[in-house]
Length: 537
Image (cartoon, rainbow, N blue to C red; front, top):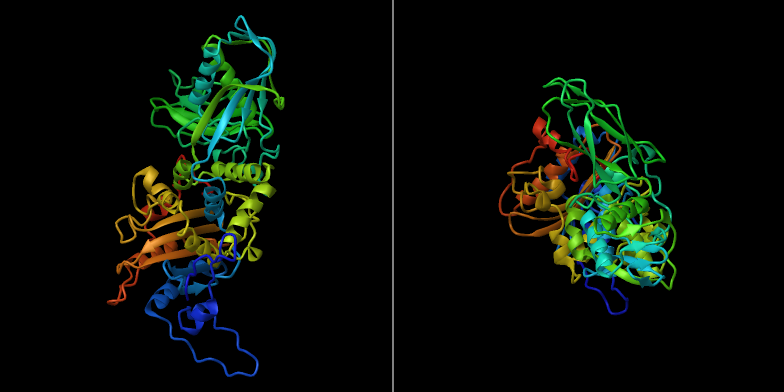
């Protein structure tokens, strides 16, 4: 089986993969099923499984898969040859493996050099330091905007000579539509930072760029029983803290809970923090991030000596508004690192809406997902057999196949931006947070460490791992493993598959790799990125 180059007849070229050729050559696992018998012909002789297929079959015979589903495809990264196929054509829920599709499409359609921007606009003239009218803060989807960026915008406004604004501060997020949350996202995830609202005007409180969130910092009070001390980062008047948390005795359990009421910006802080505890940080999502960003910007203006007489309100800036200031983001290529290493859901969704806005002049999910699907189809992924319902994989309507994921992984190798995208994938067993990412605690001290690069996926009842790995012989492979509807996590088996592939050599027998079920290995499963919360990733 060959991974064919793009052909001139197609605008993007087609990757042609002939599974029948591989099966005839005896390359597919017996577990994957034999070719259908053609009417009037004799049944083909049984295909002898290769040693690699036998070892992978043994791993997938694990009891964790009883009553559940698993798909695993392994292919040669150079030729596209299929070395193993178990249920490779079965549609499964991929969780954050969905980000492979959205990130690759963004690199191609937006371009690795694309930058988001945020503008400050006005229609009225500035006379004697006074802007006689409204000032507009218009966002174009920057998911990396920090408080410091809004401070810089305020400095630019002050430098332009504005000292007072007689009108309102208008927050314009109309570059994207008003749908804030993705298709079928769980309502009970809404307060948590991995499920923040998507807005074209937003703000991140940290350099993980967790857009649409703020941080609640906590410290114990001066005496046992005293209220816990709280602060918002960045400081803002949008979130309203309702604090009933108290200080517990030294050495007592930290039971602090921070949660936003649905449909509001009321954040309730309950529980207890032990005396002597250091600063705690809890991330919470914001209802309507555009107003949050505008509030932080207004505070930055005041700090620069620029007074706004009016209120903050949402509206669209007039087409005739003139630019007073602009802030630009890092490039999309640079964004790939925090996005993919930490599996940031909000980056994925922002990129999807940005693709819709840039390519089709419509910044909504259906249009952006259409762009993602068009890209996948253009490189040979059979998109008629899969469904993309969001860009991050939070949606439980996403269905892909292990085969389609490997099709994508093979195709991206031909792209001019491949190296930057490949470098952004988490690296197994590397403890550096922005190198190992969501794989930093997995497969450490094995042949897969600092070798296997892959995208994780995690939801309740879902785990996935897809990417690239080199065998002991130096043969580069692509693989995709997706598991659904289990009761006991098969992630140790997932890791054992990765270690098996990294250990493989055709020169000598390879010892069977056993899944690591130690307590430390299982604990590592719960730190899949971001701020160390158990979360979809």
